[in-house]
Length: 154
Image 1 (tube, rainbow, N blue to C red):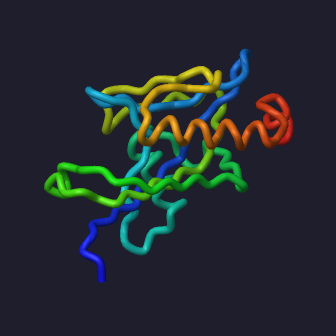
Image 2 (spheres, helix red, strand yellow):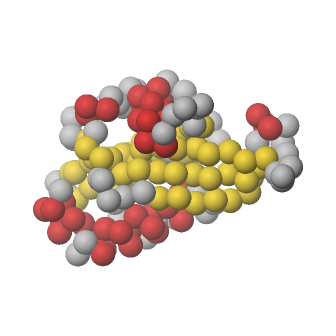
């Protein structure tokens, strides 16, 4: 049995249509940007965790989100966290893709604020977690024929 600390964090990456194409939501901490996500609780599925965390951190409810049933992102990396006494933790990030109507307004409850970013890949925001995800999402959308084609199929 391994002594390695592990953690699984799940979230829903939120996007919305705009006249110019699309925007995505990131949460603001005092010192960084992040996804609306959190750790899986006992007897909770990844998707249940992701939707719970979305509600807790943004106020966006399940009925306001249209999940893309074909999208699931997973990335595992090592990091140090205060909650684990700054020991190295093998962290797995799982994200689902969700779309909301343009009039849905998040409410930052666990973060300083939030910001919508225009979808114009490639993006360079944060190299450990955000940029790899955005690259993966870009490839996913391109495999559907690009953003316009993807949105038509939604």
